[in-house]
Image (cartoon, rainbow, N blue to C red; front, side, top):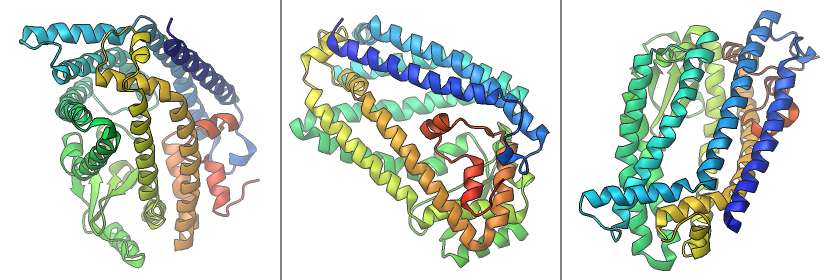
Length: 419
């Protein structure tokens, strides 16, 4: 076994075993039937038990899906699936009169093959998660017809975006010489900006319906809030989230002076107007502190570093040979390098969660300063109980995995102490 392959498999199993241990710790916490004292005055025994059972079901399923994913990845790496898929893609383009010199064409076929196989193997797990676990706990609103319609739309959309993206990615690398990492980074930056611009307007409406919020008291309250903090609100929509799930949410999007707020219809059903404004106050805190742009900036540093490091590996014959290749296709090289770079990605993911939790505290504080402390408290409790969020998190598990602080920590941070 090549040294690169051994390194990838060793690290992959180390991460899997560590994360499984954390999941075991969390599973043990979920088995505790009594409410922690910190939440006795926040949620009822019935609400706690419903959230606990939901968490246990997801935890059990997580052990199975995680084990399968690790087994599948190990087999794909050990038995050189990528090399096999590259050979199949070469045979396919031969039927259309293309030879191995057409690397970009072969790479597109390779991309389609591995994407389809990866999607197909995940379907049983998605079906079980949606139609057994989510349905058992009252969240799923999808039909099988809608589920597979969404899946088909996702495949078509993935092809429509992914195939040109892969082609352009490879062409730029091959056309710009040793400094390709800079040009590919600029290209990906422009692509991300394009996607952020067109996704809410052209892509998400393929899956959800956006309806302007009617002229009512809630609209007046939100517009008054936006005016008070000089948030450049231009549109206010309600999205039919209940079409697929009863989970609740709210968010904003848009550049510069063209901001739009989107409320899930499930949020409107379960919350009072002041609670909705408090939740929005939190979201607008992210805008006030420029959290989105800060995270975007970090992601650009990450991308540039990723492409720069890849430029040091792109010509490594050993890297390709260790995974069963006797040729050096660029797309394959990038995928293999991603395996090598995975320790850095894991560490970065952990620190990004730490930063995200800090941002959540700042956004809560902003909503509190707007005068929504009590409403934010009740809104957060409603969202948490409605979504059956984990009410008894293991400290190690939450520190490693959570992008949002546990509920009690958030309530304490806005000045609402629990005994």
